[in-house]
Image (cartoon, rainbow, N blue to C red; front, side, top):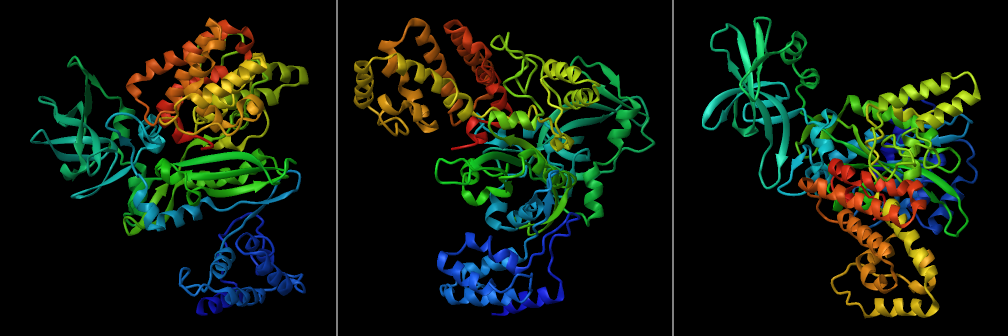
Length: 623
């Protein structure tokens, strides 16, 4: 097979591209690869053959490539599914040999490996199926938010705003001065934002109309902000220059306010990415926001806990149904010996590089493109989110990672929001304290941890970018505890009645079901069981609930309805906030012990998370 011969030749000549990492990099010899990575793709019989081939090869001998690939030929797929390779195994061997696996060391000296996020993104955009499905712009939906690119985070945050669009007269960038057709007339305007509209073809731009001052020479007036299709742009005009004397802003009442010299200088300069695009050969430029996922899982199938902390990422531009597919969840790193925040150091270096931009081949445009891939959010459970935000977690006085509420008034509302800049200052203050007692006092005062957190280097507000996940905050939170409390209060006869009431309830219009007998196994219920119970709880438990309990369960059911909807309607945001506050008030009246529970307060933040990132299903950690 020619590709096998070229692989061996590349190894012998030393011309294999290993990614060029400045860190310590493990040799990508086949002997190091075959024993672990290849075992993921082949069966036990093939593993035995490969082990025999490597038995006498303790050193990293390049000749092992030929041995591995010759063994894979014996199980070749003759149908051509892996063309030009003979089998899946030979294709995997080639991919792994050409994959860069930089090796890093934790502060304690434990090695771990980090896959290249940039290389994975390049492969994704070179795949026509993925490139054509991926959104490049924020999308204005017809009614409600159904995807993360409908949310306000992508639309309003300047870090995610698409810098460029293609018009009939060429590429246009933010801050460009253009002539376009507005209401049948040719008008001059400055481009402020690009976006798409659901149900419409093409890209739209939000522009501010630029008028010539009627009496002052080389003076202009910025007036109304209007919407235009990019396809209506007919001319790209030069930027303002030194001949421009003044620019005024026109207020709603018609009054004129002069633009400051700094603002005028900013308006007169081209967008930085336009300059970079020209330097790169006039490449198209767009954003590829990333969703970073982190969790721990057990490496054992038994109940013996063998914790592996992992980092993965998803492309925010793909729809929920696409991101739910295994092939679109991209692995970064894992370890059962290195703490998750120590693995974040090389991860942050890669993310900062992606913030600056990389050149990729775009299969949709069929050309190279300059992309920037900022992090739009981190998906994780509440304890991991606290670590990411340098927060002490639920055990501290100020137990919310998003705002500065303390547990004495946590159900009354949301307090001052935490900010990245203030957290960095607090970390520095705690570290500079001269005594342990002073450090402890500052930790309690701020609720901030001074442990090393490389994620604070990212230009993202971590506190607002760790949305409240519904599974851990609702299903495995108040619903689990309320169900256990109620079932333990019921007699054996009443438990049998509950089982009978569930069996008798028509369930044709409901989704899911209870996986086991509720009377015996309610303590072992998982998320899908609580989601089903939330739909029927008021019909099942109403005879056994007091008035205070009815109010709690009814309010919680309304929260579930809000969270597990397919569409979030932003115009109803105040209604959603009222629903969450109603539940907080109800459970506070029912039992004051709930007042100190973090998960009850986090429910108050749920509407804002959905406003930023779309419905809760778009930022679920588990489905």
